[in-house]
Image 1 (cartoon, rainbow, N blue to C red):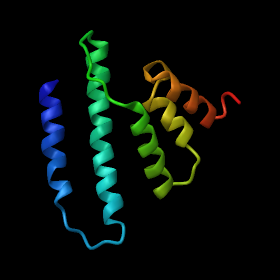
Image 2 (tube, rainbow, N blue to C red):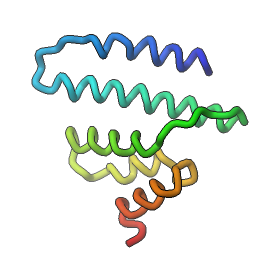
Image 3 (tube, rainbow, N blue to C red):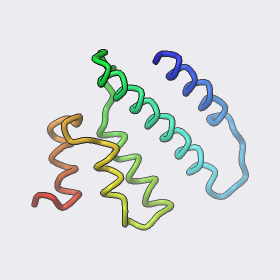
Amino acid sequence: MDDAESTIDAAIAPVASSHSTRPDAKLIVDEFTNAAELLRRCVDLARKKLGFPIPARQSSQLIIEHRRLWLARNRPGGLDDSLRRLFPLNDLEPAWRLKLLISLGLIA
């Protein structure tokens, strides 16, 4: 699984130094960077399922960035379902679990 993380790192490295003239160039870089972070989360979840320790990553920052990027390109519909699938509640820090439940309208 360390190979998977190394592959993710190698794939994302050129993105930071790219020079696009598109009006949405920064957003594209942010989307690729977020995709890499989500892939790292997938590796973490695979490690967890196999019984290996996983590094501490802040799900809260991933949620904030996923929401920001989703709303920059898409309508809000589908965002809540996407968040539920990407961030199972039992994997979240307690404060963010509550914020996510409130933002999804599951509790008031």
